[in-house]
Image 1 (tube, rainbow, N blue to C red):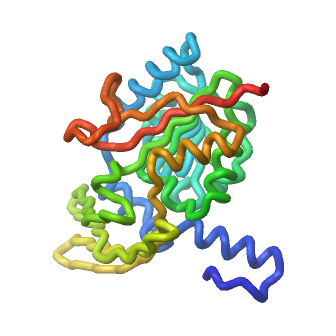
Image 2 (image 1 turned 120 degrees about the vertical axis):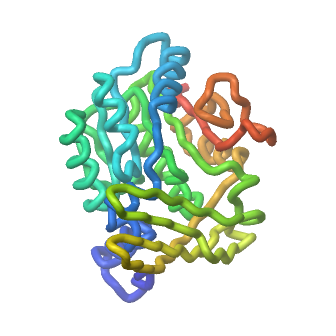
Length: 280
């Protein structure tokens, strides 16, 4: 998919989109992804809204959920009266998120777009990437393009929040094993990371994923692959400053006020919080 050296600009762009999508089999099966990865995110929305209120001194009125998958945060925000947008590269995910939102009565906007080149109708107060979505950006240049694009879509007092795995649980130096599973309406789905080959120079890890689906007494198994890059907090800080578009606010270890990003068991995730950089 990536080998477009002899292709024209159009095919190179198509190859890049395919590489960015990663996990093409898994992500195209939106309903199965939702069964395995679904989680309650009410507390996370509470955190985001309270955080924005402290930083901006006003209530947030808009949010974009970037690389949204089934659109959990966009849907939850919309149900609270927030003007919400969900953006995902995979049209299958966008369609699934839209359908689920309609069932819930969550009125949101859904866009199929690259996280480095989204164009919202108007700036938003809160931009969010969750579920390790930044790991598909494999180079500094891709991360910089994403940071600058996010900032271009933020209100002057807007904030950007990203959620990544805690480095003790997932990094090129200690990748670990990961399994997500769930059951719904008689269908059991398990998604497991079964092999990882890290490059300690680029910090890009090639991973193999096993998806097991059990329903109606039958079991289906498929395998998929992806490349992932996990940066340190210091690297994200440096890239944000280099972008000239985002200024750091701090890092949290969970969606909980006062939970520091540290080595304690209570620090479950790495949550970076940035504001739109001001000129001058």
